[in-house]
Length: 453
Image (tube, rainbow, N blue to C red; front, side):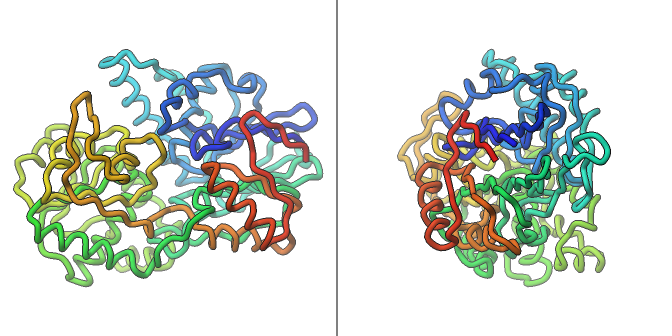
């Protein structure tokens, strides 16, 4: 078995790994590059493989840096099946449609290249095959030792790590490994025995705050924002982080009665449509969310929430007096409706931006997080005078302790670990910890490198 690292190698985005054995080739993930100044070029560059030779794609989850270039495979000749979990597949369809809309708008306004067109998305949707956790996915001939199994990664709704059996060898691809004790999603399953573990280390060099503290931290930020009389902006990934924040608001408002009554806007079509997917798959909830659902509580809704699906509805937010809360994508402030709100409120010293999502290097979100005195949005210079609050405890990625615990959770140690999906500093720090604490051979993947298993 050979594994080629075609993305998320030396960086966090662009996950894509090609597995080859006995002339058969499959992909694990095919995501978009994001954040860096080279991302647009990287997305349009030729793949390191011939798409027509790929027989199947396994997608770990619905974040765009893991699924966003799958329609591009079809544009370049791929015609095989694409496998994801049941809720994962439903969310992936939303991501593809949303990304096509964004690209179409950017192409019309600025002449930016289109990665793919509607027929490519249509082909991808036709070939998307939903699977349950623990279900065997045959990738070769009947009886052949070439199959995959999805296990719950606890990262976002429907996320998976992949157990891949390839002609006598077992590789595990972590996808993105989830944080523990987060709303709605279950904790990640333990690692299974494997010859090689291809593992993300996004937060391999740091620890998160206590999960028990995050709701209280959010409550304090909301209260302080109300006292200042400004707007509270929460840039959030439309899938997972938005639903997690809504769950917290539901608890604070309906059960703890811990917030004043102010307007709270959910401003974004993708997040609103994603909510419908969450409601369609209650069998995937963790015990707390399942209990709420069975008791008749829609934990994605609460008094004071206003859902603004259309552009016209979104415009009404501007005329709503402060204080108010606006939850909108994108989480890294790289596009979406949050951009208009940032232009309006970044310069307001009474307003607040609460960072509840990872901010990659090179993004507007990272510049805001680093408290740059001035940022550029849509060609306009905007001074940053508002309050900036950061809540690391809301990360959907496991921190250093979680990653180490999970890597050591299999009945037997992996034969080796290959680190991906991490900035260089995080990857090197985590590699050293794996060597010292787990005593497992480890390497850090480089783009284009091929590992022989």
